[in-house]
Image 1 (cartoon, helix red, strand yellow):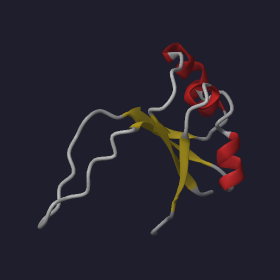
Image 2 (tube, helix red, strand yellow; image 1 turned 180 degrees about the horizontal axis):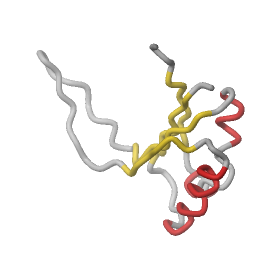
Image 3 (cartoon, one colour; image 1 turned 135 degrees about the vertical axis):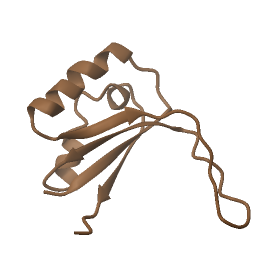
Image 4 (cartoon, rainbow, N blue to C red; image 1 turned 45 degrees about the vertical axis):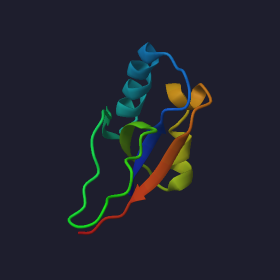
Length: 96
């Protein structure tokens, strides 16, 4: 089963207390693989100026899902998504 990362954009106001029930539902469904809020940081490059940091990303959740449509269906109840915010879904290809 492929893994996907759900990248939360910081573009909607949502209820913080709504995260725990949502994450619990993902855990109970066997899809939750981890996640975290994201703080500040820097971009680095060995030589030359680095690209600017992607400041609008506020967190991520890693899930396993059958396909992209299944991963999208896992957004039901996501506090940011339900508040009208943007969630970017990316497949994490296996390299093993």
